[in-house]
Length: 294
Image (cartoon, helix red, strand yellow):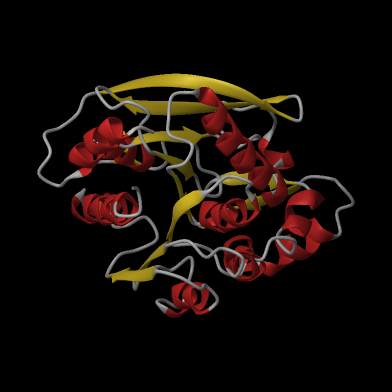
């Protein structure tokens, strides 16, 4: 990037900057011959903008949980708000989720890591963003995936933000699915096992998913990542807990600039109570990431 565009980006990122319009488009790329669908936001008037890759949580999709008060998904809202600061973003549906290829029962953590790595490759080759100014945001299980993507990618990642990340997936999923489902899933020999989630949704998962919970260790992954790390946790989180201890363990194994952001919020950042906590989190995350871009 030349000096002049860098100055333009710096101005766009400033807190006092005027809102920047953003073009939003649906994109596709292939992973293992299967289609991954995503939405890219590109701020107008910013040449080769920095970019954030957003990775959704378990049973989620690229726009993420809709905030009842405003009928807008949390990731869609974050993308819009960051675009107003001159930051591009790409949010994807993992394979087996949302509009991407495959049935949900075939999802695995390893497949999601592959999708995240491929998304960075897509961004770097797109010619629409600065491939030297990329960051990643992951929520819940997407935070676990994001830690692995950041550690394993061949691209330079300027910052990593983890929202309510799972630091021990097997333990967290045993709580969410129940020990009987976990045992049945590990012993199912490839057959789908049905489960009812705490919020009433019914799903089915195959053996590969349960086995993959033990194949990605976010603490070990984060130990391989030395760029700036932002971890946001809520003291009222009843899915990933106890907090802030579960978030702190990731910082304990990370070397480099870091911040543990602790607020009285639940696993969905009090979204069912309105936008105040969600907007605060989006703003704090954006500020932390923007500070790392040259």
